[in-house]
Image (cartoon, rainbow, N blue to C red):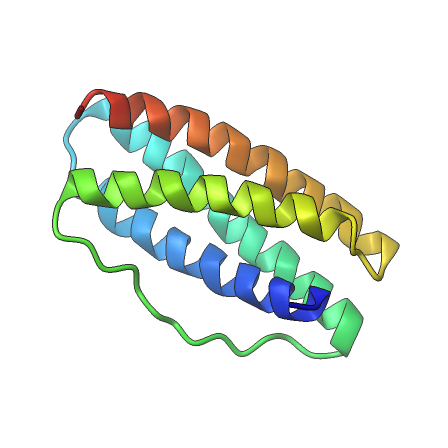
Length: 131
């Protein structure tokens, strides 16, 4: 997969996880869980916007995403999917950092990678309370 395809995939995933967190936030009454989920949701939205900016820099247009929701059957399953998604994002963004065709893309990718590491740590704490 070339950089642009990875970027488009990242845009899709950031939007999907923003939507997932938006749903999960309303499925718990635990204040700490709500705080963790809300924080991740806000940053996923920022990543989506940053990656759209990078896409525009490279192609001259914004990416038209296919809004596909992440399906899950319980709060716990949603949290597990979130954890897996955050860890996968870290790996993909790490790879993409070495393929950047434009210096202006470095900050958004690096920032997203660090944020995803933070999210995975916080979500793992939540996840560990279920198992």
